[in-house]
Image 1: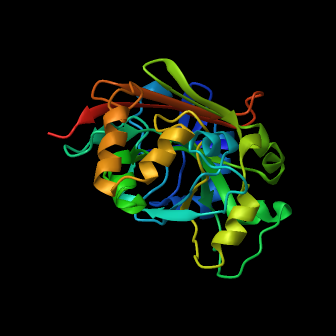
Image 2: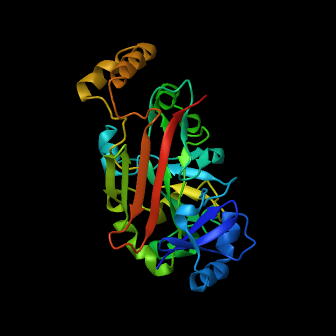
Image 3: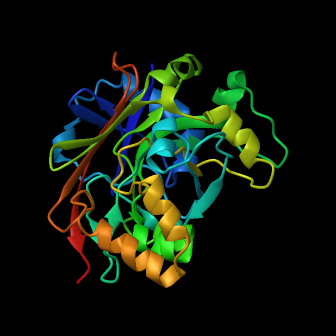
Length: 312
C-alpha cells in the first residue's frame, strides 16, 4: 500500500486516517525525504497518536526549485475537445518551478489575463535520476518514480494562444497547485495506476472526470521519450496531461476554416469575443476542487481545494 505524506513549515508528516504523525527526519527537500524512506516507514509504525490533519497548514509536498515538465494533449478526451484528429504526436513543455503552490493556496489571476483555465493532472515525482538515453519499461517504473501528487496546470489561455507561449502562460506564480498528499508508492502499487480517477469541479460543478485509461502516452513511455533530451533528478515533477472538460474547446470546423482565412489579429479578436461568452473560465471567488484516487482507496492523493483571486 502507498504511504501518504504531508509537508508543513514544521516538517514532514505521515497521514494515518484523519491524523498525521511527524516523520523524524532531517530532510528539507522532497528528494531528501524520498532518500529517507526508513524514517517514513518508522512514522507509519509509530505509537504517537498524531495531530489532526485538519489542524495542519499544508504546503506543497514538492519542494522547489526543481524541474517541472508537462505533457501536452495526453488524454483522448482532451484531444477531442482540442480539435485533434488522427495520431497525436507526444509533446512536452516546461513550467517554472516558481509556479508551484500549496494545495490550499489561492490561484492568482494576473491583471492582464482574461481567460484563466484549469487542468487537473497526475504528477509523477521522481525518485531516481533519469539520464539521457534511458529506456523505461513498465516493470521499471518503481525504479524511477517515487510517488504521485495532484497538480493543476493552470493556464492563461489568451497568453498561450495568441503568443504560442506555453512557458509564460503556465508559469505565473500559483499556476501549479500541488498536493496535498505525496503518495509514496510500493512496487505493487504501480499495477493500479490505470485505475486512478481524476476529478475536478468548480464551485461544486463537475468539469473533468476520467481515469488514466484515457491517457495516450502512459508514464513509462513518457519517461523514455523525455529522456531523449531531458534529464530528471529525484524530486523533479512530471505532469502527465489533463482529460477533457477544460473551459477551452476548439471552435466548430466551419468556424475554424473561416478563421484560418483571416489575419491573425482579426482571427484572435473574433475567437476571444466568442470565448467571453463561455462561463467556464475561472473568476475571482471561484473554488477549484480536485481529487485523484483509485476506487478502492489503495492510492488516494487527497483533496486539493484552491480559491481563485485577482492580482492586487
